[in-house]
Image 1 (cartoon, rainbow, N blue to C red):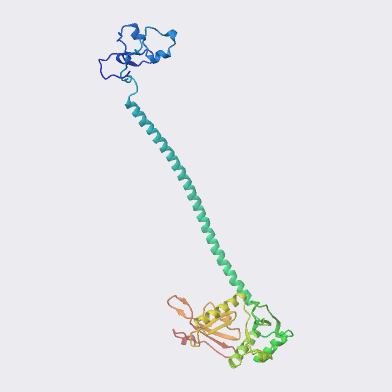
Image 2 (cartoon, rainbow, N blue to C red):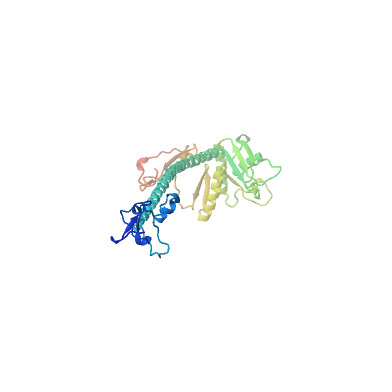
Length: 361
């Protein structure tokens, strides 16, 4: 069977499958088109499917003894071009399906990415709000710590601390305080002492005696006694206040009278002394709970405009001050002049005599 490229070749149509077959391929004699057999003829394939009772014996079949030549495709069988077209269609369909699936997958990924981006934006906003709140809270805590330290220091305004005073089991601390007044030339009455006792060591392993904290009746009494101690030490540079002044027969050891600082200020004072020693600063002192440093006698003293005059001197003095004017920053920073004069001394500031320099008249 096959599609002939020569129009002179004779063929017969199968009454069953309607295909065309060449007589030469069937190895049978040519049958006339007007005959009944031509009209009812069936190919061997269709004939095998037809029950024997319905077969016509006159239907010729191919001669089994005749050697067959190469089989040709039926005239109306699918052509190679059609098969090629079908493959192209299948490839196109597959590509279209893959494209649709890929597009759907990309769309899902984009949607999920947008969701993640939205969530990330929300989280970034939350983190930013938390950071801002944290900054505010840190500032608040720092401010509260400063206020608490100030209140804690103010609560010690009447106190003095005696350091390195030798301990004795039978000692009377009130007597020691009164004896201190006698040594430095400042009378201390029992009514001036509100309370006094030894306090625990910061480092329990230290061999230094426990300090004595004295609570006096007023800041004025405290300042008077502290000033007397400072004056005594300046007047006796070779025999500054020590254990022998209190009758101790042990080895001579220095005794220090200082303001009673809050724990944070005490830590700051220790760190300042360590740093001053490292940097070669000669003087570190405390006044009114504030810590001051000075490199040497010739070094300039700088005023801080945030420190009020009342924090440096009490109401027994009239304070005249002029803070340094900084043209660069249009503010006040360091330098300046401060004069404290006792009230019994008559004084007056004449501003008309003042120049652009750091002076007071």
